[in-house]
Length: 349
Ligand code: 1CP
Image 1 (tube, rainbow, N blue to C red):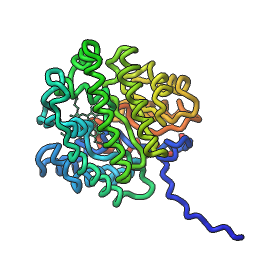
Image 2: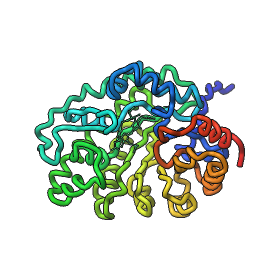
Image 3: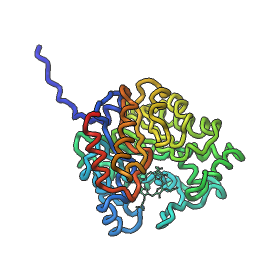
Image 4: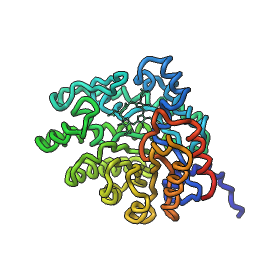
């Protein structure tokens, strides 16, 4: 009997690498690729109200998600939203103060968690953004959703703002572990709902941003980073078996190997302070990695950029690798340097 030809699925190089395939030309996207280094973002931003007005308007958020794709043709699109949408849905008041950053109230250093009334409808416009982007995205592009990891989100909920060394959250975790655990549990629960909603709306893979995992001592890292991330990964995979998850514990340093083994994420993001040669030697065999160009080398450009890019590519001769920065692209990054980076990455080293 003649076999019926199965229509080939479009090749999404980034998704293939997340599933463990090695590509000689590494797929690439840049953290914070939708944002203020792009003139078209600044124009849109100026014509709307504040940052949250952009995030909660699905047509605008979809447009911002697509802007860097049109300009550079990255292999991945990252949803335009923010990690602080979860505290907003848990019931904190959220605002972004120009030139200062986020403010959340009441802050959980003072107010009990029980005073917050969940407003899960605040997640709905984000799912509408996902659907709008999905409809417009080329089939080769991998669509990444994201959330903050429970620990990083908790640092904002406790302090009510970005804080130096996350001291208030760390103090609360020592002084009243049961109360801090309840905060982590609530974030975990709403994040699971939020990520499931993103996946059901059309996301291909997830990144968990743990931007402040570097401030914890080893026991805290086990308890507040690895354990909640592991629970979240398990719960998400129970609902969506095939969804790849990238864990990005920024600043984890030597604790990266324990993180990779303990959380069962599908790929690990490396910040720019991690030596890629060390990472290749110490991380579980075959585990895909993402990173880790210093955003400052991208600003510098020229030979400094070329040397840094070559060093990273040479460090992963057989391991699946997604090229990215070690942290978000900075506002003063020249567009021409992003173009130069892409040209380098599209040539065999
Ligand atoms: O235009 C503006 O003024 C807003 C700046 C901005 C942008 C573009 C904020 C405020 N958030 C975002 C979008 C954003 N944030 C994305 C979307 C994708 C993209 O831009 O390409 C993502 C993935 C994030 C994630 C995020 N938000 C993190 C984790 C990653 C990281 O950079 O460490 C964190 C810590 C936040 C909180 C946040 N949101 C915005 C600011 C200024 C901050 C940081 C506050 C602080 O420094 O503590």
